Amino acid sequence: MKLTMRLYREEEDTWRIREFLRRVMLLNHRREFSWHVARWDYWIWFANADLEKIPLAENVFLWETESGQIAAVLNPEGRGQAYLQVDPAFRNPQLEGEMLATAEARLPLRGEDGQKRLQIFVDSMDEARQQLLAQRGFQRVERPGEQETQHRRSLDDPLPPEPQRPGYTIRSLGDGLELLERCYASGLGFHEDDIQTARENRDQPEWYHHIQSAPLYRRDLDLVAVAGDGSIASFCTIWFDDVSRTAYFEPVATVPAHQRRGLGKAVILEGLHRLQRRGCKVAFIGGYSPAANALYFSALGTACDLSEPWEKTWPAAG
Image (cartoon, rainbow, N blue to C red):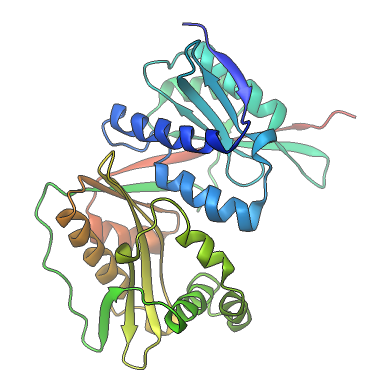
């Protein structure tokens, strides 16, 4: 079937890509061989809007059938990184070769050394895509911490009992001052107890309002572990897609002063129970570091896929 490639044009494409990703999740039997729709939401409404600021109309590409059905999407997440989202019914070497060529031409990062660099992420068991990448001069990245372990948990199976942590209350995020406390905890949890970053997060909370404006955001699935003094010790935000009946945890963290008390596992398990009661079938969490992956294996079990970056470096022309 003939496909036509075009650039992202208008906001309607954001919503069409969301529906495409939901459909592909089901066609892939609820595996992360393409992005979960929540990852798209998180990137569009927060990560790109507040941090990366990559122009969508210059950097997101759609391949469509003659009737306008989306067959594939190529998008960045961070400059110099590209992701291939492909409907399995349309997947073939010609299409993926065209997507890779487009990524090389339009999405590389130009380094200070004058070299172009591009990373493409691929499932570790996807030999066909790996062969295409190798033919185009890409090599698998062996550097620690750049591979994503895609943890998943079937919620058709029984879960451990709902957690209890003495001295802490696990519940949904409140509003007002507690939202500011959540912003502060994010700065501590993700920036190695950096008080300055935590204060900036709290003093300028618009970034969290953007997260809350994303289509899949639900306050009842934005969970916190609250210490006796009212401070937020651990948190996780869960994005439940009731179309594919899958969920995506992003972000998950514990404030350093409260680590090694089982709080990260506790908020994840509380989330899994809430998802199970809402009819969710599969939950996903992505981990990069040994510590994060150890936590996620303990909370979700051993089922996982591995998404590996392949990298190409070449001289910039001119």
